[in-house]
Image (cartoon, rainbow, N blue to C red; front, side):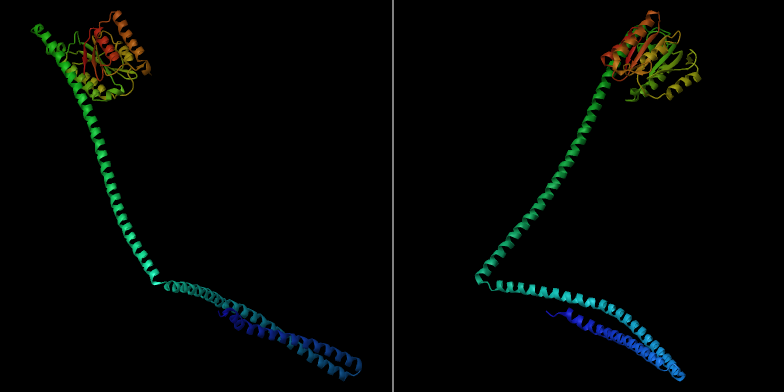
Length: 420
């Protein structure tokens, strides 16, 4: 391989270095000559001064020689400075030339690398040539192996395509199974909803049947007793099984949180309005209760006249403003209602057992709260109270302890028990 790097160095660098050396030699020679001249001049001057001290003409000549020599020294110094400037310039040009020569060196290196590649490819070509010299039988075996490999490759490709088809079919099947599972869950939820609706309808049917039987019994009982002059209000009261006077009535309305489900609160507002419109209610007040109890009118112990449209509208307006929330403080509600004097009846609308007393939630001691309510009513009756408690039960009032309390309130005071 040709050594371009060495050739390039010889051609590009040595001529410029030789020129610089020449200038440097000239400078050295000039300086040396200057030194010799100075020395010789000094010797001559000293000799002439010593020999011709008294000769003025000689002194003038010597002075002229000295001036000439000094001019010559200045000229030599000028030449020296120019030579030094040329040396600096030559060094700068030499540096630039070295920078310019770098691509040539890199090209030489690349050429060397290419030469290595050529040698490697030559070796590989030799191997290929050796393989080409195989016998005919070896070539046939190689061709047979290649054919076999192509066949196996075709089989593998076919299997790959078949595998992809199976995977796609599996994905579709899984998607279909998921869709059917979702539909099954929807159908199950719908079935549960329909089952709940069926149970609710059956329960409502049972209540309606019981109410129909109660009304039929009351109607059959009253038919022989109906006498001329009986008002429609009295007749309706008898049909509902309500005994006693309704001249002064306190409606005790449960507004706990559970009253806000299954349309119970709307039923209470509608039923209270119907009773006041259709039954012979003379005066009325309202006690609503949840965790605590609130009465209307708030001040005084007077009741509102239901014959006065304005006072009746005030009572219905107060009922419309109430919102169900909180626990069930039945004790506080009855205690507040009993504070009214000369009350003929309390009409209690409720859907749950007592769960609070004096504003304190106490669901963990329901039995004690029930006994507290019973004792309140028992003490009032023992003190001679004639106030009847008519109970309108809502929701799941079949629960034994709750149903027992409501029936006790109505039966122990001569009131009616109506389940809705």
